[in-house]
Amino acid sequence: MFNVLLVGVITNHSLLFSLQASFRTKKLREITSALKESPGIASLRELAISPYGLVSDQLRRKIWPRLLGLDVTESSMMIGTHRIL
Image (cartoon, rainbow, N blue to C red; front, side, top):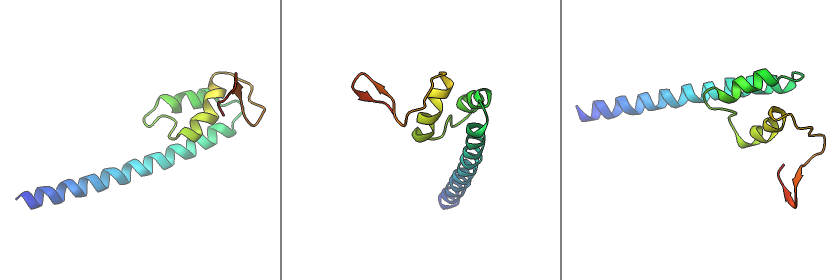
């Protein structure tokens, strides 16, 4: 019986992982699409507060300046002597 339960847990975990990966891939496409919109702020806000947030640190670094209304025309931003992007 324990073996059956263990197999069920592993199978459910694999299915859950597969669903999470699929959801994250879909969300990544939605974020990429919202980044192409001008300005796309409403879409980005909704995506930011939905499950898995903005998916990765790399995307967060691109999106947060937009959400804050910062003009990010340079390739990097500095605060004092610290590079933030």
